[in-house]
Length: 400
Ligand SMILES: Cc1ncc(COP(=O)(O)O)c(C=O)c1O
Image (cartoon, rainbow, N blue to C red):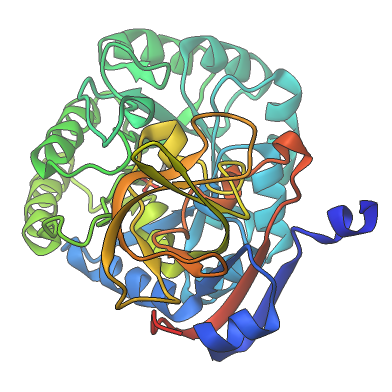
């Protein structure tokens, strides 16, 4: 048992292609299956929709830090948005040079800041307190500053990172205090940053938070700017019937706003974005197997060999993840609760979900499992971590 426990959570990578039938024959469920090709396609799409020639993408690796994903993005020319020393070190170990990594600090310790500064990675500072402590120790260095642009956006309150209730960023109204500290320690602000939230469907909020950030990014405040960092938050479709976000229209508007800003600033700056979910969410599926069917009065409960320790977004954010019965895709539709094996009542991947008839032994595919799923996994209840299997090409034919 101990051996099995230790073996799980294995990271497996293949350069070739697979399909579900083959993967299920080769590996025991539960496992995550990632498609490199899907990530590269999303990367190329996001690179072109914001109409600005100097756009640089920093992948928010918190969404999925599988080393093969980091490697393919590195080969595409992408940078890394890291939020902990371990993320910075993994990025460097995977071959990203320090100039291609930004560390966005949040409530970091002095020790963490000194560890990062030894690597040469740029630090994005998000409080006046940290700015003061940083300036005292690292006078005359380059920094980036994270602001709270006072716009509340994002698909759940836990991932709204702007506005009056958030812990993130420096208030725009504190810009005078920022200038005073930066002046005192000769800090050179080469970038300003915001990340308003995750899964932003209302693009006008994204544009408003961008405009609010640009309103303080004036030459008289920050004459050394090289870039403006707009963070991530680009929404993906979780429900098949959700409307598509019109990224072309949004990209056009963002490009125009930025052009006007740069014309006024007097220099053509780089525009940075930090997508996580947009690159990886749709590139992953999670495969589980049904082992127990039971009824609680009128409820049909399908119990599977995994739980929220492997994929916690439904529990954490009440998030919808589409679930397909790949063993019986044409079965008669019935309503199920799809429940996990963790000793908590909330441990459900879906409640009241219409799904083709489920039999014990059926395999279920949980969609959009590439972002914020394995990277949030834990071994609560001492359930082992699942495997993560990466292929360059995955034929997502969802009937086996
Ligand atoms: C600072 C920062 N940048 C980028 C992201 C990526 O967000 P998303 O995955 O929604 O694109 C996050 C997510 O939490 C973040 O905190």
